[in-house]
Picture 1 (spheres, rainbow, N blue to C red):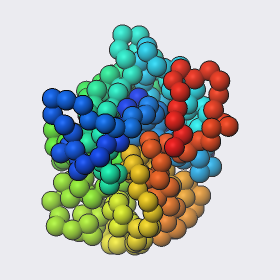
Picture 2: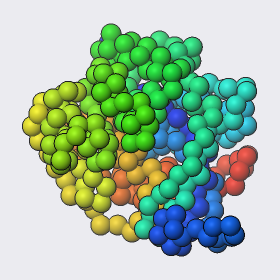
Picture 3: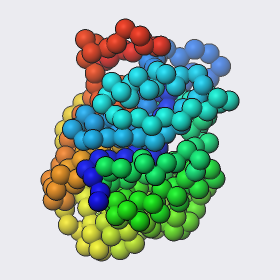
Length: 316
């Protein structure tokens, strides 16, 4: 018997977000100071997805690894978001850190230290994590280091054995190229749904268009939902397009976490039995909400902040 819970396996990250003037990295003054608004946020693709899913009413859980430095803060933030967090603590490494430089269009350039997240492994798995779970979502970042790859194999095999449906987010074109696209597909074929952005979909397939990429990926996985950013999203199943939604007009402040929010909306809707068009619509609405605030998590009101935060959070 499977349940209705959503288990995410993925990263939790300390995001240092710097909003600066000027186009992308060209806006940075080399060898001197560049004025920027800088805030600290809890982040990480996996943790963002779980947080957005909880925000949308799902029974969301996460398996992740944090470091010795900020683990308590991240645990508190996930609890406050409504996520049931299964955190493994690395006593020797810090939590992953991303420095995200955001230009006036909301586009990001990132510096990444995977820290403890790059060392999540099969020893962190427990079969009880799937109790009450109906769907497993795997962040592609988990596969890109050997310990995480072993964990992924174990979790995917156990989920398949128990009849738990599976989705995967490829996560990063840079890591995909290094890992190998065919290898990535081979390692994740237990999934019935892949959720790439357009660049990832094109890289994985070599197709010339989003439609062609979605159709090709859906023949491999069964279903593919391709995120098109401000242009919406589309879904294909068994080689045929089944749904498409346009983007929603909104003011973009920071695109961090928009794809994670989309995945959460899509999966939450599918778990509730929505059809493909309704699920894409839920995903795009969550993504549109995500870009209106700094950071990758749902906006939390100042009145909801606890008094024991390790770091003050700006709630713009």
